[in-house]
Length: 300
Image (cartoon, rainbow, N blue to C red; front, side, top):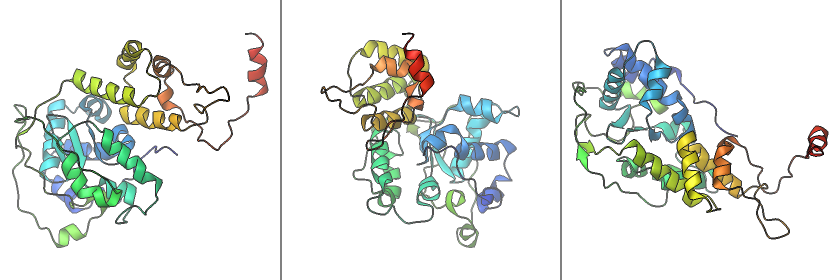
């Protein structure tokens, strides 16, 4: 079943990180909550995803500005709730995997279907500076097979965004009060003012996502038309990748008796918004058509 929400523990507001955030403007706490509950965080329960500041700007509201959102990300980075790279716009919430997927366990049990899903996700997530550290921190829990490296160039934070001052903090009794996402149990990040990778353009990111999906899609016909539809609809990357994989192993695209597979053209798949479908796994029977559906076919 698809995830529709993320858990938000009460200690988001009462733990050590929350107490530290009281010394910062209100919009920092709003940004923290948005990061673990936004659509991207639900689609990417691993906590490593690209932040859509335009979406945050619209969804948080309350008169917040984009400059304030960037300041909030820098503050959360400095407080070690997450790492944020303004170059690639990727955020990594350190303990998202342990909170949302492992739920307190040290690792998935051997044979858990989520192991293969996590491996596929890790292999296809867009290049970003946290690929290697994410592997080091979560490889055992997710049973990841091979570490990915980042080769990006480096550049400083945008002008006007200053990192918050560093304060000494207790890392013994205070930290023991917190759990999961809200504990500061992640690897030590680079300071928010450190040099970071160069920014890929939006067009480059869109092209990389389309190419990854095109490589996955089993019918390689009409690439130009499919590229136009991709630019028009801009489907959620994680969702369309997962749905396409599900369709590849589904009853709908299974081999027929005549040796053919009823796979739609890529542009048709995109035009129909099929990334929101729920394909029928092999081994389960397709639902029979209703009488009303059968009657309508007579008109054609």
